[in-house]
Length: 279
Image (cartoon, rainbow, N blue to C red; front, side, top):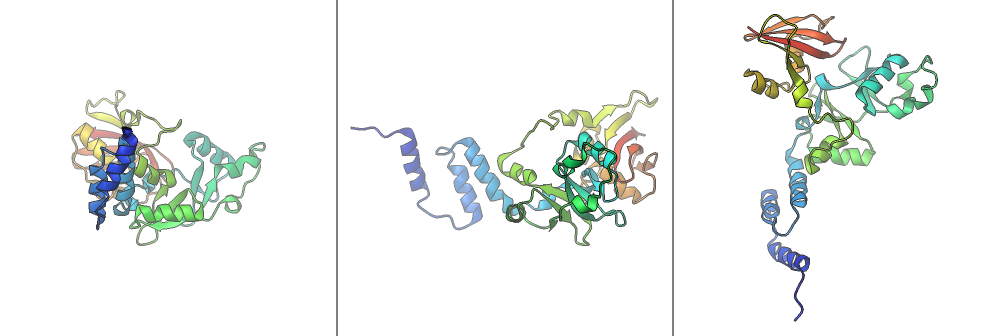
């Protein structure tokens, strides 16, 4: 008598398991989770990721405004090339020079290739940038994935209820919700270790140098602090929320609870490095 192979038996078992059709998303999710004996672990994880997408708002997966690496529509070529090289990104939101909170286009690094032989050439960013795709913070991740696919776009600008830029979401961000973290050659696998380092140059023992992109949750855990991350996600965002728009970010001192924050490095739009002193 011919003995059935493992995979054949598994498919028959799975068909039997699916004999009663689930009526709700939760029932389908439970069915997937209960089917681990028929499916590979990675397959189950991806199915769970797909089923979770409708419940995931785009604001949960986006890069917040304070962490965006961006350009301005009146930037010069040499400044743009510096940003491209330092970030190793391929797509950049371009902000309006008149309304610094509004994205007016997306610049693709490949569109600058014809100008690389003449770094002193004049570049009109407005003529090169592409039309941005805008999505609301409340949009579901599966809806945004469908929009990106339909428009053949890799990046979307996330806006709040007032039409102001609150973040960016990429195709990779959403796919990572399905398949897990996607590492590439530019990802820093030990990034968290670089977020907060002791400030040996400062006379105070309780002093640390903190990257502005440090998640507030990570800051709280490492330094036993208790800052809220309900409205902003990073330490830089926390400070910007406190001081608002100022003409010169660098050198600003912000007192929060029993902490003193000094902005050590910043440009006109973004905080980069902070000294945090526990008083």
